[in-house]
Image (tube, rainbow over all chains, first blue to last red; front, side):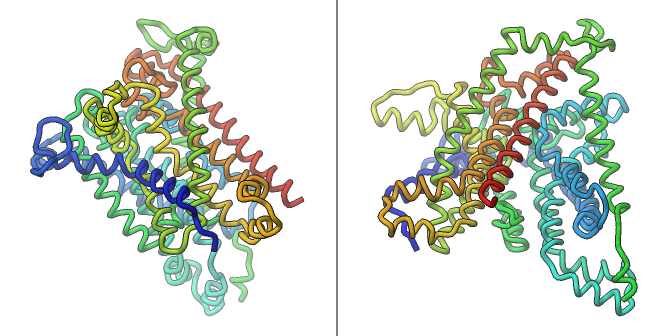
Length: 264
Length: 285
């Protein structure tokens, strides 16, 4: 096994510091007792967290985001499972084109989707509707579920399914009792990945949310363009904690390296 | 056995997704394309008709040209820095031993999951006038300087957000590489540098290219970072589209800039696909 030299290890340490610094500073400043953005010295305080929990706008947006992310992730997985099944095992023309279409939101800037959906919504009078906002989120997170599920479904032994069918199970029974349990890590992993991506989405949502449906990232962006106080740091620290928890669960269920690096 | 042997062609299973993509992707994109050719009236907004005025304005008006030029410059610089930092980092990670390797890989990649707003906010604190970087400058005797609302601030935050997208494809192509080939080069008397530039680098070129194109595409269309760290004067393409839609209320103008951004992005991504596939074919064939 080749070893890394001292220079290489220093380089690695610098990259790690660079990647963690903005997250660490956010979490530290969140505990400041001061009124300005400053690092807490000897005294730490939870007052800014308290302020977040008593801030009606932030709390409403937080609940909106949680609700939006969980419903859109669920719908997205519900759409992606049958589609991924058709793509991995169906024998029909245009399979590749269909897969490319379903993955295409990954290469379209969210900004473009945002303005396009803003126009659609104002045509059909869907501005301010939670349902249509959710559909928009489903559109941009479905590729993540699709990619994970396609790779989960290509990588497993189909003979068990054939055995179930030849022993007289219906296709539905086979799906529920055999296929679903085998792809379950892909399903839950896909759901969590969708949840995170929907929860974090800013650029598209900023165009299509109305005051009643504003999501947390949009609220934070709006707030940060006007004023910056330690409350923003407290909200950010909470998001970092929530993301870290989700990432840990994701790692236990599906393997974070498989989700992030992908094995296709 | 009959049921298993029967061909299963479940196109209908994709119909719900297809309906979603038709309503939420194809229709709105078509509407935006059409809108970009609409005439615009200061009082009434988009008034229909057909005109190429907005596209002409984008390529002839100094205001828009400057924004596109700045976006291109910032995108290219971000990509360059991501290559210079990300490629060696991926290489160093791949040479680490077991527990360290996955630990550091996770540390470097997991920030990808944290909201861009949070990370941008972190950068605005790091770079603030009273922030730790300025305090370090003071300690070194250089004095404080204005770091926020500069191109440097935008690029630093962009590199932070894009670096994982560079490391992932390079890491993937390093995984496919046989370490014995590098060993062979070394044992035949090649220097470290020669082994890296002549043996390793050519093999991971597809990864570097695809990472670079993804980074460029994302950086050029980024919104939150220039919006929060660029201030009012440092406009990039995405923030300009936002202004046109929500402040100027000139939707046709915003639509044409968005269409140009989309087309540029698709060209970059398709080139990425072609280049990477071509590279692999050349290597195999």
